Length: 104
Picture 1 (cartoon, rainbow, N blue to C red):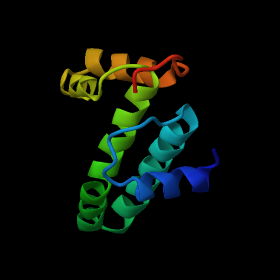
Picture 2 (cartoon, rainbow, N blue to C red):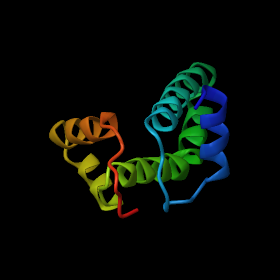
Picture 3 (tube, one colour):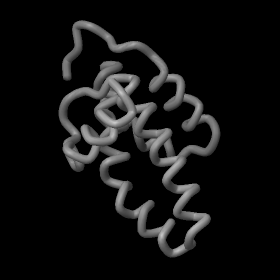
């Protein structure tokens, strides 16, 4: 999946928490959000906050779909609230290849 395809897929599945997301879709989306957040932060702090709010739901959705691709429940996204340890666990899981067969 290319950079553009990933962004359009994530916006078209704005609040779709079912299904699966490939590694490329997740990481291209992550790159887009980092670059766009940096760019909007340079322009205006308020614009950066609005952008972050606008992409919150699709970011959660693509994270949930990525966890589904590794055969894990989306509830594991709550590990994000555990500083450092939870973040490392989620990054490691996001790096892993898809598991087949998969219950999602």
